[in-house]
Length: 396
Length: 213
Image (cartoon, rainbow over all chains, first blue to last red; front, side):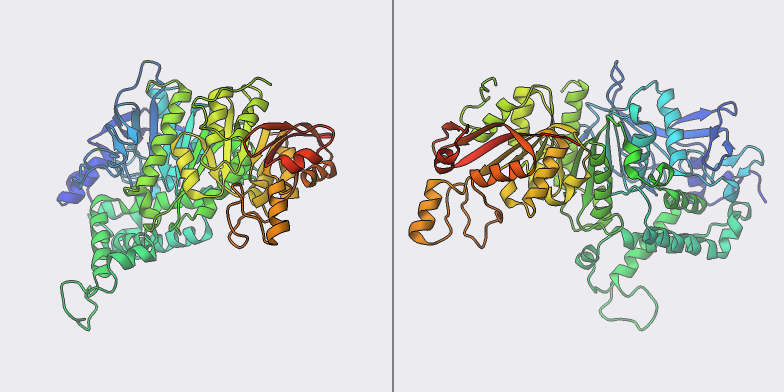
């Protein structure tokens, strides 16, 4: 058993674990004296919040946009990923001259609490034991993630964010910001998201978690100590989840029943079909860049998310008195976070006469659409931000 | 009411210009059936309103939001119930009431949501429509009602007199009412409305609930 597991792994895993504790990005380290009180009532300290920034904060500190990432995202929204060397996950949307224009706005993207790219999470070294937290990490919530981000925004000296934007679980964080810290959010763009996780979504997450935990290499969550990684379990979890991010139409267009580099089926369980090969690839590349325990904790946080539950089961209560300008976006073929769920948020905002825009974008790319180049979606974001910027008094 | 000089003369619908005159500067406005957002834009530019829109067509909603207007995709029949009482200074329904499934409920909601409601609608009592029905025996097709009956979204057409009756039924007070003839000239509606009902191609009513809840 190694007390310094960071050094004891093969190359990709080694890089990944190094990033979990010493990220390539900027990082805010909060000392033991500034613990975070979690929803489970535990105190967590010390805390690291890894983040990237793009663009320049103006002197009035009024042009900051916080980008919240989704389940398997990270702080590298518009810059190269240090492990995969791939471009930023939202580089089509965020950058100079892009809809989230880094020539105009100061963009902040933190890795979430519970993540594995440098913010404190189950892959971080627990200073009490010198080993990764593993399953000894406390169960966290979307609210905890947002409270950690609040510390970062405080640290950057920003009173009010010009905009908080994010898709999927990023959208949940946007909603949490807008309801729990409403005075600090001038505008909010929750995309392809919901105010609570549906039963179906919890069910899919449970399949993913069970796949991880059924892998003997998970070792009861202590795989770091045994120099192991539950590769197969996490890959299966990713494969199942990946299907939910697409639409039947998108899968059919992309793969149909096409065979993978062969002219006929092989009467075996090899990846005969292109779609199988694609999913296997998705699974194995994911394992190279993501921590299995992080996956368990983050999916749990999403399952627990219910903005109405703490507010007398009335979603409108989450937004009462809000002055934030909202732009809700959904996609027609997204069956994971269907338009119906966005509309529930819109109804709640209407019930308090909030300033809200709501667009449903016609796309056949499923839930994944929010990560893809969708011209109508991009035009919406650009238009909404320009108008909000005018109201905020930002220079055009 | 102060006369509005449109930013681009001739670019605005006459009923929009009149509505813009009715609206007090700086007020909160909900435009139900806001289309491409032309009225919201006019109100923002000339009266510095805090405006919101509801529009059925997804394409038009997206166009509005891209232009920086706060508009949601929604349905007057279904979505107005969400709004709290007197959330807006004005709830506006321009040339939309005839296309709703439940005009009475929609108007009730408008009078509840807005301190005032402004409603414009095509007048089915206009002489040309009467004449067309009388002489051809067929559903009239006009500039304001261009579709044949089977393709028209307008399931609840009414005359100015009909609308005035509904207003009375809902215990609302008419603060101002104006009809427009075919050339866009204003015909203020006062005591007798028979002439306006004959000559008005469309009408705009500024309403207020007599006894708000």
